[in-house]
Length: 292
Image 1 (tube, rainbow, N blue to C red):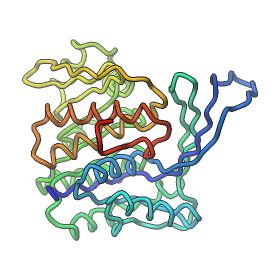
Image 2: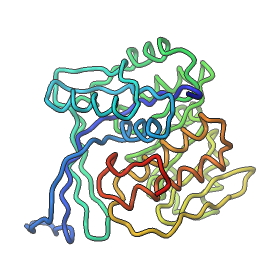
Image 3: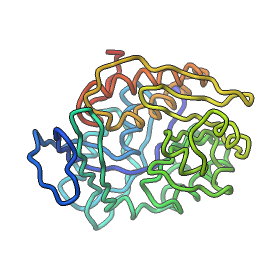
Image 4: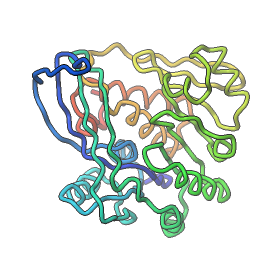
């Protein structure tokens, strides 16, 4: 199965409205179609790794509604271990999503049970799983939880990967616990306070402990290595929906690392899977283990 991966993060039910164009403020438009699906950045990343064959565990928090059991069933279907999912007496997280004719999206996340995840219980879960090699996190759960889990992981020689989405400023103490930081271009600008450029990426990278990958959508990705930028191109594809592509990247990257691929090869795999996902509508429903 490879090295164990533990993803701590959000689980949501995605609610997609497909529209020709986004409405302006105060405008009502007629949508083209609607569907629901499974999402949440933590869930997405775990499912991508599970689909690819990783030994992956999810630590998330679900509510007391009809969405919880279907979410657990979906994890199991996608080979994600659900033994350490927490529960709270609130609603599960939801994410209303608009997708326009270009495949671009606008998303509102309502955290629900994701805000109730318990750090102490999460750390105890990692201890019970035993021999975890990678902990993966994002910013859709309280950062206090991420701080405690990542600090514990770092102290115990577990390699940590953090996807700072939604974008926010991260303090130096937290970044000291992050081995791999993977923002997209917008998140990079929020975190660093700098405009996106190769020079600014190198400047920011020199100030942090973490290895740095910046994902660039259809432009591919940048990796900082030995104070140099290494560029990775993405294939040209017809875009149906970009939702979840960044999560496909992170899930595939950590999968590659868990199978002892070098970081560069893991990034190539991640771009392949992200590029594949944007060719289909939906979030996890757009993920595939093949290179189609």
